[in-house]
Length: 99
Image (cartoon, rainbow, N blue to C red):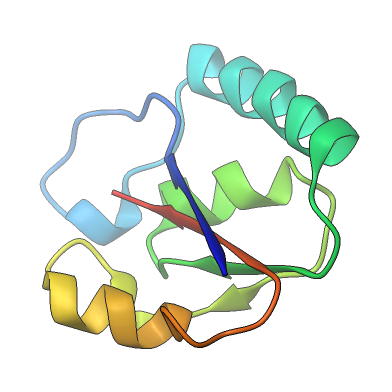
């Protein structure tokens, strides 16, 4: 299994961490990186995304199907992230869009 990690693009400041949105610059960053990932994506790619708005917006730039996992949100611990990916036994590749 290949594990790929993508931190969300630049986001606005804010009190409610889950509701912070991407800045204009962040939206451009996400589009550019999303295009690069689509062009170079491995076969059998599974994409899992944190439920925060900024990670959802970042993942949407991929224009690929993805799963939202609460366990990889901003307050997640490493063991929850590892469990969500199925590492090391999962087949194919997993891309995590997180924090």
